Each structure stands twice: as structure tokens, then as C-alpha cells.
Amino acid sequence: MASESDGAARVAWIRSRMPLLARARVDFAESRPFDGLKLGMSLHIEPKTAVLLEVLAAGGAEVVATGNHGSTQDDIVAFLRDSGMTVFGRRDDSLEQHERNVRAVVDSTPDLLLDNGADLAAGVLAAGTAGTVTGGTEETTSGGLRLRGELAGAIPFPTIVINDSPLKAIGENRHGVGQSVVESVMRITNLMIPGRRFVVAGYGWCGRGIAQYLRAFGGRVAVAEIDELKAFEAALDGYRVAPLTELAEWGEFFITATGHPGVLGPDVLELLPDGAVLANAGHFPWEIDTDALRAMAHTVTEVDAAIDRFDLPDGRGIVLLAGGRMVNLAGREPKGNSLEAMDLGFLLQTLSLERVATRADTLSPGPQAVPDDIEREIARRFVASMGASR
Image (cartoon, rainbow, N blue to C red):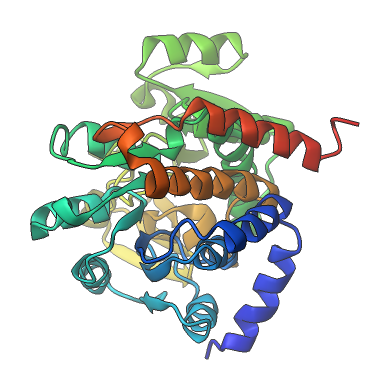
């Protein structure tokens, strides 16, 4: 059973390795930009997130939070609750319970939103309480797409999309996600990377990073990308580029990183070779059509908590990692992105939330990029923290 003391030891180690957030915590304890404000959060609850919440609480925020489905770490929930925060959720929550957790955060009527996948933004709109929200941030590609698609024109408050930041794109998505996804696939499967054939679906910043780190380990990498300019870039970066249906029989491992549903659908699944391994790096567990895969199989075997084998009537066996959820956070021994990458990404969160809390009148309603002055200040701090300025 997870305990607060387990979480405290892990958070202490990570806190000691996040110098950008350490400085922000000192600054916020003095300036108190969130005094009198309630922060509603829906974000993966793991040790690095706990350090972020400590910084926001030091700035005066009352925190009401929940994790994302399948990635919550119970010892960190216990630690945050012991620290006086209201936190909903467990790692083994069903999707229905997770949706109730999100509604509980919405029902607390937060002033600020720290969102991941636009679940809170959609929730306050559905609840009719969007008018009481000062503003917020959105962490992911998937959430940004949702704000500009399904929820376009409906958000009456400013939402800074952290994923629009070039700092996040390079530091957290390309290098953080790229490294952690490849590490997680290796850790979960214990299979060799060198010489194996990998298909990366999507060549956005996360897909770039995954492809880069796979190749660095000696993998043979192909890219499937429907955007012509990104496909052009992938080709000039030296990857084989083709549609998924053409790469399906060639690949041994398939990793999705698009933010869109149904990327690995029945048309691709029926072409995969025996033993193909499927993993998803996107926020929502919809990029791999797990319902179609389950319907195709005559037997599903749970190899362990992070590996399922689907045996098909034609004799093929298809392996799915982490149930199709985010493989670097929902898999076995989840670590997520590197501490340095998240120190950078979460400083973007803290300074963007500070801007919303103190200068919302300078921002326009709806989704928007991180202000340029924040980007440049964080870039200076990050380079200095690495000693690269000396």
C-alpha cells in the first residue's frame, strides 16, 4: 500500500534536481501571486508534478487536483494530501471514476485551470461555470487541438497552451518524451533496440524525438506522417517515409505520437506481422484502436501489468504495451520525462499561470502561445542552470 513517506522520499530527491522550480518557489513565496485563488489541476500525478504543485502552493494557491487516467502514482497522492492539498484519484481508477474525479475538480469552482487534454476546460463549459474562471494553461498537443477544434470559440478566458512553446517543443517534447518513451519500451519489454525495425507515427516534436533516440540506440526507423512538410523533413533527416499501410508489414515496433484518434486502426492492424509490439506516446489512449484489436483477437493474455498479447485467428500474436495509454507514464516503473526536461516545462507552467493570475487583462480569451518574454527569460535561466553560460 502506498504511503506518504514513500512519496516524500521520492519528491525530496526530485526537488533537489529541479533548480528552476526551486528559484520560482522562493520568488513566489515572497510575491504570493496566487493568494486567494483556487487552482484546479488535471495532470499526471507523479513526483515531478508534486514539486510543481509545491511551488504553486508556496505562491498562495489553494490546490484541488486529479491525475490522468492510468498514470496516477498512489504514494504521490498520499504525499500531496498530507501536504494539505485536495487530490482525487488512484492508479487503478476506471475511466468512469477518472471522469468523476475531473468533475469533482470542476465542481470545486477553481479560479485557475492547469489542464492536460482540455478536460477541465470542457468541464467548466459543460457546468456553466466558465465565467468564474480567470484563465489557465494547457499542457499538451492533444489539449491544444481540442481547444482549437471541438471547443473553438467557446473558451471565454485566456488559456496559455504550453505545448505551443518552442522551449517545450525542443526541451520537453523532443528530448524529454523522446528519451523517456524509448527507455520505457526498453524497460517494459526487455527487448533489443539495435537492428530492430521501428515505425513512428507522427513527426511532430515528440515523434522527432522518439525517432532520434531510437536511431541513437541503433534502431532502424521509418516515419509515417500525413503532413507533407513534416514528411519532407523526416525524409531529409534520413528516415524512410511512407504511409502506415505500407510500413505495417515491415515494422516490428509501432509507436504513435500524433494526438489524433484511430491512427493504428483495423486497416493497419490486419497487416501487422506476428510479434509486432504497439506503444502509444500520445496523451489520450485512442491512437491505437484497442477496441478493434480486442475484437480481432480470439484470446487476450495479460503477460504482466504492462504487456498484453492478442492472439488472432490467423496465428499472429500482437503485443500491446500499457493498454494503449501513455507508455512512459502508464507502463511499469513509470518515470516520465527527465527531471531537467520537466523542470523546464513546469517553469513554463508556473510563469504562465503567474501571468494569467496577475495580468489576465493583457491576454486575449481562448488558446494562445506562451508570451515571448516568458520564453526568453526561461531560456536564459535554463542555459545558466546547465553552466553553458560560463
